[in-house]
Structure formats: structure tokens, C-alpha cells
Length: 114
Length: 117
Image 1 (cartoon, rainbow over the protein chains, first blue to last red):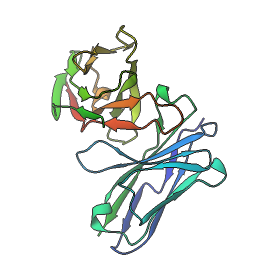
Image 2 (image 1 turned 90 degrees about the vertical axis):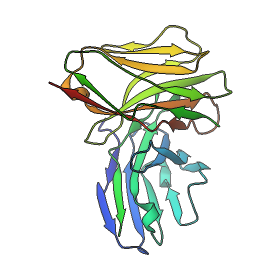
Image 3 (image 1 turned 180 degrees about the vertical axis):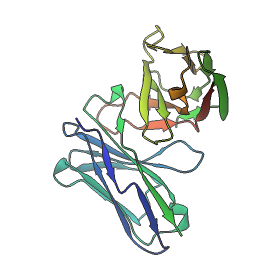
């Protein structure tokens, strides 16, 4: 069990560029979550996968955002045409079926849009 | 919708002392879970302690314990014998008991705890 891995740790991009983040969950966890955390705030839910199926998306996830989890393993989160308001920490978390025990979070990807 | 409120943006405690972090929440649900997460400067969110709403007994994990008051919708975290390594942001979080769909966490805005010598 190597935990939840996220790559890259930091990303600086120019406004209007596309960016993609990767999350590798704990291998036996079938549930995967993406959250966004802005400065001074707690994380906010973005989207949820059970295996390869994306079962829920937040209103925060605009059309410029897309997430995938092919084959129910790693997941990617892509942001197209980035805006300064997208600057945040993007956290990935995974859990087994019994989510009442809480998630395991990754260290996050900090995105800065300049 | 659920809301979680942490009214203490920052707190400080001396090493070996005890500190209590406050959390209140609002929900119409009767079955849910509550969590405290710790986010050290290294950023990874770590689960500290969890509480099932249907259990009256307060959860404890070594130096960490909670005071869960369901009627008052209050869920405070007590850290005993504070250590320098406890320095971090602490987030209170709520999870609705929900089968078949995402078990989303709703977080408060956090309390920054500084443990000093």
C-alpha cells in the first residue's frame, strides 16, 4: 500500500492553456474522488468514480473540466482553457466500498494560473 | 444541504498542554458520520478520528478525543499532551450516510493549530 499518488505536485500554466493531472489511488480501492481546495477554505467535492463509472459531478465542475478513470485504475482531471479562478489545490482521494471509514487523500496538485 | 462551521481560524497551544477545537454543523439527516482531518504543511490530509452519529459514546484515538453533542450539532476535537508534530490545519467534515451514491465529505474552513515550545 503506497497510498494515493498525485502528479504533478505543482503546475504553473498560462491562462488559456490546458492542463491534466493524474491520480493513482490505492490499488484495492474502487471509489475515487476529486476535490478542490482554494486558499483558506476546506476542500470542495468535484466528482466521484466507482470503478470506471463517473457517478456524480458537482456544479463546480464546469464544461471546461473533464475527468476520466479508464479501467477503474488511475484517474485524470483535465482543465481546458484555464482561468485564473482555477488556481487551487486539486486533491484526489480513494476509499474502499465502506466509505464511512473515511478516505485516503493524496498530497494534491497545486495549480497556479498566471 | 449540510454545512460545517469552524469558528476558530487559528489557535495556539504549548507543548504538552491540552487544546480543544470547535466544530458545529447543520443537517436534517439523522444518520451520518463526522470526521476530523489534519493537514500538515506537507499538505496530505490525514484522518485523525471519526464518529458515527448513531453512537452515543465519544470516539477516542490515543491523544485525540471528541465531544459529540448530537442535539446541539456540535463535534469538538480535544488534543491532549500536544506535540510539535500536531501543528497543522484541522478540518472538521460531515458525511451523510448514503448508499448507492457518492459519500461526499462536506468540510469546514479549518482551524490552524500552532504548537509552541
